[in-house]
Amino acid sequence: MSDLFYEAHPQIFRMRPLSSLSVFVIMFAGLLFVGAGRVAAPGVLEGLTGGMRPETVQFIGILLFFLGAARLYVWYAPARFECILVTAEGLSWRQGFMNRQVVTMDREEVRDLRVDQTRLQRLLDVGDISIYTDSDKPALVVRGLPCPERILTLIPGQATTPAAT
Image (tube, rainbow, N blue to C red; front, side):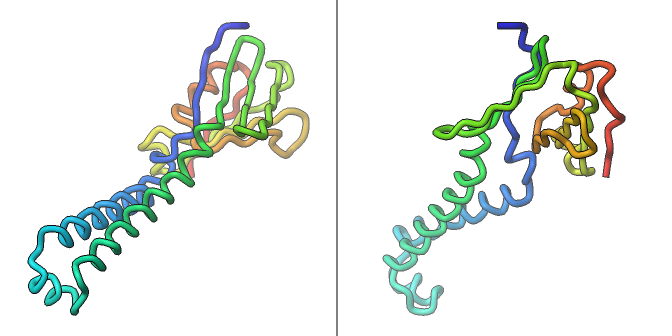
């Protein structure tokens, strides 16, 4: 095994900061609904919620919380099974848990590297890497990598200037 220079998984919360924040707010609101259904006096709660019983308010809170948690899981779980490795020999991209896909490239195969970042991605230090080998289309595009410009420095002479959009 050769020296490992870089290993990273896509960063979901930095890739989708506003979406992640809104999901956390929905989950917090769900917890508030559950708490309100448990501690509020039944008469007061029915007056505020248009006649809903406390059990209904609690059920809505539990539903909101689990819908938010499911959304986070749908984003987060696949990213945990994606990984890019940069070694002395080249690049390796692994994806999947049960059905695994592995793409490896020697350093000599890599013709160009390109980093694409939006303004928000630059602030959060996350970006997309496009790896070109022998055609005009990228052989591999990896989205949401932390510190993407570090890969440019690890494979000298192969990188194009970072593109900021």
